[in-house]
Image (cartoon, rainbow, N blue to C red; front, side, top):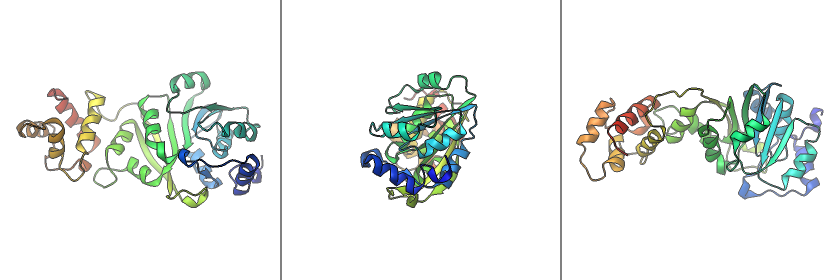
Length: 294
């Protein structure tokens, strides 16, 4: 297809919408990207080639899917909106390397899907323009299930992307930052103004690449407990780490044992959670876990 026929142009997008009488569902967070430059940056950030596969979540009418098909050996596009399946089937007809799946990615058995659809490929990445309302659940499912992924390149709400990539010490740094950085190395690729979508969302977006870690950045005795300690530490951001942990682990006791544990972890009780690195949280959770607290 030549460039003027690509799905991502405003003219072609509007033509497809009108042809099929498609109406946007606000509940599904549907916003179609109409900027070829941004699409190029998204695909480029994934590092795809003909030996690799791409999983797309929420293809819409196929603007990004079309670009992925030109870069990857196989593309699996998962769409929750049944109304879009026949539209995608027609507009993406020229690309036999695209497999359409109707379903909710949060309910799919992704390990089985990967085994069935991406067998023999040298690497797999997730590339998607994610609906704002399910960004975090989808990303955490992808990361926590330890799928054989190289990269996750997604366009999400700018504010959420900044939180995922935040370093300790700032207002953006929190439990989401630590969760994402435990499983991956985040990098902001570009910001995306709300004006390049149909319909336009109320806020700007950003493209972020999560390079999936093959090894954890820290050693933790109990991964689930590590995240419990992180969540407890950020329960009330203005409180010190000592006060937050006391509420969670010593609601009726004195501070003596807590002070001892913080000292053992080499953490000043007066610090706030947003100043602790992921390494310090690992040390803290291991000490608390070894003390037999749950």
